[in-house]
Length: 107
Image 1 (cartoon, rainbow, N blue to C red):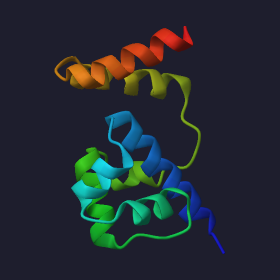
Image 2 (image 1 turned 90 degrees about the vertical axis):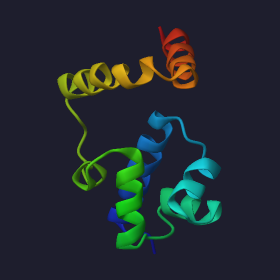
Image 3 (image 1 turned 45 degrees about the horizontal axis):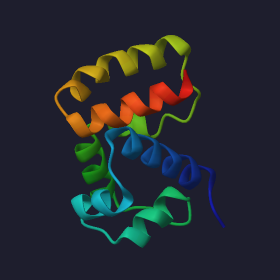
Image 4 (image 1 turned 60 degrees about the horizontal axis):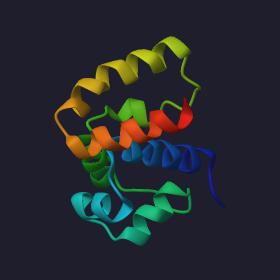
């Protein structure tokens, strides 16, 4: 049976992974687990070890508490988050293309 924490934590991992522009395959390789294990974590069907959690946090460059923050963020927080991370996107043409196409399609 899936627990609330497993499901919500998996959603947060998937959310941050996609923001960073990693495919499941790329990200699983970076953290040293199988792609199907990452998929199970992201869907809440499996929980991760503390070591895996630490690797996820390090590679995604987010604090563990951000992964466990399940509340809906305020609009001001979301705006500041996007604005602050745009500086990181500026130096990576692939990520910039992803963000550009995303914004272009929602505006």
